[in-house]
Amino acid sequence: MTHPIWFELIKGIPAAFVTLGIGLLATYVAWHQYKVAKAKLKLDLFEKRLEIYNITNDFLLEILNPNLGYGDLNAFSNKVNKANFLFGVDIRGYLDIVQKNAAQIHAIHVRSKANHNSMLKLDIQAHTDLSQWALDQRLGGLSDAFEKYLSFDAWH
Image (cartoon, rainbow, N blue to C red; front, top):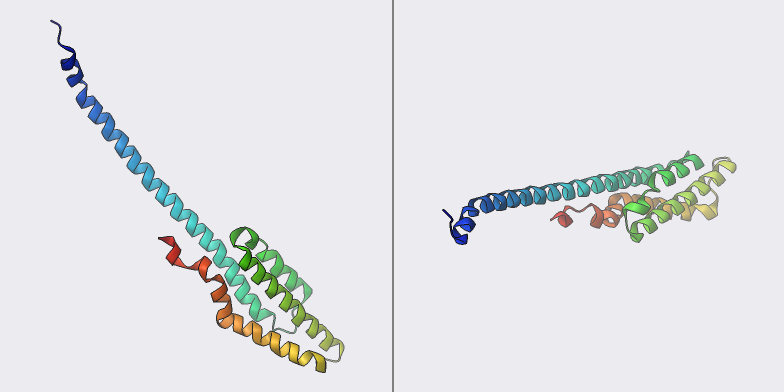
């Protein structure tokens, strides 16, 4: 006995629904895996950026130490070198300013040591200004500079 074509098509409907259900389930799982991977990427990026922030925060206090050496300046530069890949041009410029000011403070300390640990008159104001700048950065300037990169508001 032969059945009409519509009868054969109707027999295939349950299999089509099963296939559709499996496809929808696979799409649902893939979508959630994508969301988890995206959140993990954001978390990894946040952690790397936070590391640069913490290194810079610590260094802003270290640069006030008269015993800061060229090795310390180079170590900071090497640690924050990866910031070029993690931040925009604004943070790279900010870190350049931190390094430049640290080098100026270091130069003042070197001149003072060469002058029997007595700061030269021409260095006193510069040292005061640079020290105040470093303290101001620790009290908010650093946080303001990094805010857009470390804010959780952008995670939504």
